[in-house]
Length: 488
Image 1 (tube, helix red, strand yellow):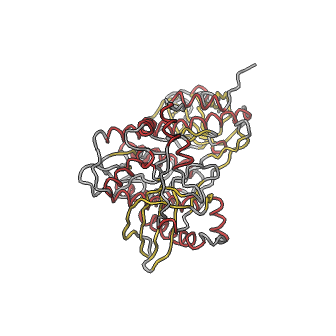
Image 2 (cartoon, helix red, strand yellow):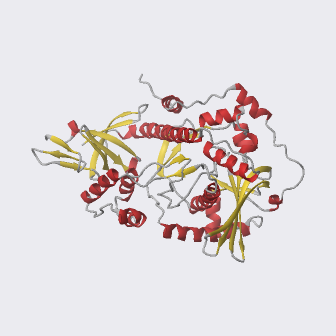
Image 3 (cartoon, one colour):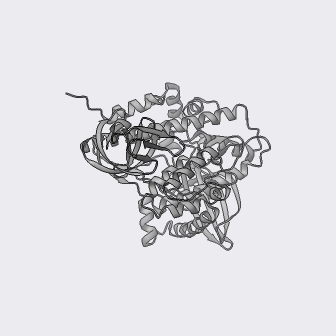
């Protein structure tokens, strides 16, 4: 009987492959167990406002809560973020473990949190109808949705509702019924519309790539795969968190020494040349000069009208640099912000916790220790990638498990990678890719053309180029390795 790997096998392999530890040291669990809110009976003025949290159905670690209102000048937005720094004191057992992990890891049916669940899902989580400590940023916008001023301060909130994206989407379409937060959500919708317009003017990149949503059975196996829906409610929270993050970045920029920034540098010229050549092969005239790059968001909008939009978006995204953390501000190319940081998720990202500490130190007029900060941020960037790859690996394992039933069946795909040894082909219907080995291509003598990213058949003139549409058959599927062999 052949070995059939389970979801637990996929989890274990991903954690092992990327050096992720899901075992908690006893001193850390003990510190989490004895942690206390230490709240007084005195009511904070923030408790008067009907904050709500908006998250996914399965979420338990509620980092952020929002309250919005209209005013004479435009809008007033309060974004309350869990005050993790109150519970995770510098150099404590909890802090040392969080600094070692640097991020929570989200995989299908499994989360490896940065903080023990007693903190991440309880004491720090902004649960409804419970008094919770927060670091709040209050932001004023003019009538066009531009930030006029902001202020940071610590406080206590009592969220009136735990809403899901689906619930907010329904209220966005059909009206807000609950009077507790009706005015706040209606003001939120109006502010969001202004921020969306500004995003377009700013030229922020908004990629359109089909991401898989895996509908699983009780045993973790995949029942079906659908395109993940990105609701307007998701975008609303994204825009509000961006506003909070750029306010935090501006606050930090007044430090004369170092800061903590989320940077995204301009694309490298070599990758832009490659992208330009690939697009020209697809009949798209794009040179990748300074003007083209500055107007990339407009170009993406045009590309999105094509049938192969998702693949072209993927190729454009592959030409971008990765965002990372740094003490030196270099701006954020993708978001088109001159300064940006991460402030809104201290439960699951260590850089956010550091940003909180830096803001609080400034508010309290205390010194902040910058020693070794750049090395810490570089480690956070590395481990962020490992967490992302581990998650993607498990998703790929599950997709392979699902795809096995289609062995020998024909699917339409696009070439997303060309190497001397063969072609990587994305199959949109299955939300995955596989390898079509050069030996399984039509009989010819193939040469790899690095400049044009293609395999040229010298005897019969066969040619396979990056971005080409191609029909393939599903061959051998190795679930635990996450590999699919394709045939022509």
